[in-house]
Image 1 (cartoon, helix red, strand yellow):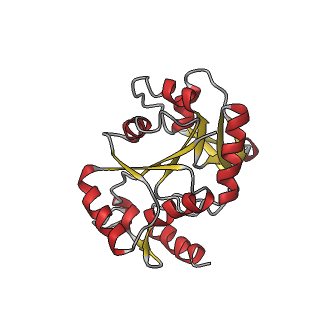
Image 2 (tube, rainbow, N blue to C red):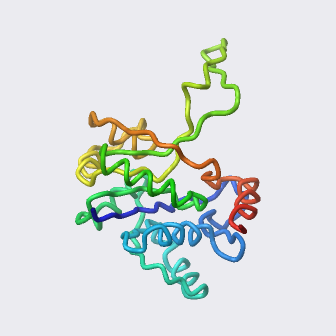
Image 3 (cartoon, helix red, strand yellow):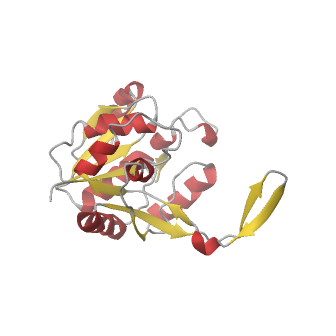
Length: 221
């Protein structure tokens, strides 16, 4: 089956406390986004890679690719108003693929094994997403009250989230809703079932300065 990955990189990085969007922050000599792109290229060099970034960031990205001699083939697509609309834009250039994964551009530490497991599971079940268990105690706040909940029933969702092309295309024909927090929630709203697979704990979404420290240590290996 022909595979594609849409890598969404539209963040502005406000929580980093700087002007440079987090996907372009250098980690061990390369921007976060290039680390992410290379993970997927090394996983499967035949997969089609689509990078969705805001129009105002595209010339900067192209400059970085030139300076760093990026050899990873990828298609650049202009991002939309929200992540939902960015994925919609990315889908327009992968209509000939059978399985489509969607990944956050600031998750450079996903393992090739997790990527492969997601794609193989989606090939069988139609939709697969990686998860890791919640390891902290969790409390639910209801008004002025709160209570502990069984953390064994809760998981942290990661990317890539992988789907049959037709499932993803159908789901993204819907209007955007506030309940669409990830691609799985969009597909699930059409009545499809999502398969859960084990993620890797290092596959964090780089959002804070502390996350950058973790990335520097992990990506150095």
